[in-house]
Image (tube, rainbow, N blue to C red; front, side, top):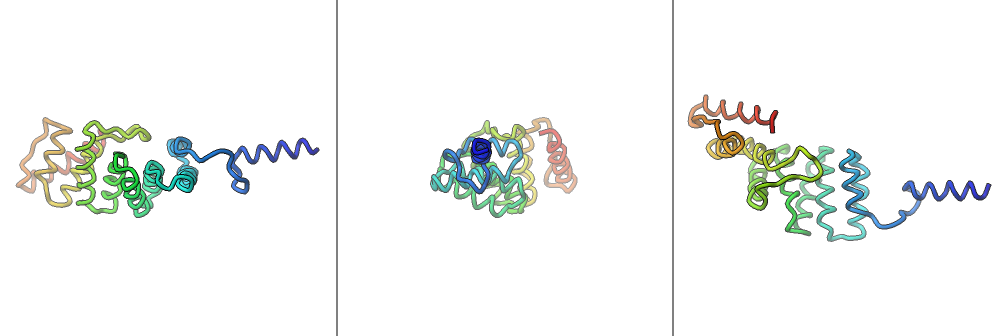
Length: 190
């Protein structure tokens, strides 16, 4: 009976039961695995544990930002992305995260600024944890925010990068309407 109790106790510890201490250090890699599996609460816990051990780990704050963004906690996402950039100014992913979160808030000028920085730093950007997020998505969100700001000419420039054959006269209501329709069409493709 003692052996069985000991085995159960060890299994609970290895399974990560919250009432028992963690075996081994927290891991950014494990947290991203949880993120990739859609287990955002587990990922948040793991990223938090990493930060507890390594308070200057920018990648852990970046991961928190993406998790909170997925959960719709946009203010927390913005805070964590900005902390990530303070801790590790060479990171690129927080700029993509900020682009999407600022678009959703909406804070269109901040969205445009984050997207512009990302595109300047990495014109071939690809987010390694969501296979469908890349620089084209960032450009599309930037174009939408530019339209929201009334800067249709710059929005057209972004759209033409994604679809060089598209053109319209953004000085007319019809042209602006065509541009908005193209952005929506591209959202279904990009």
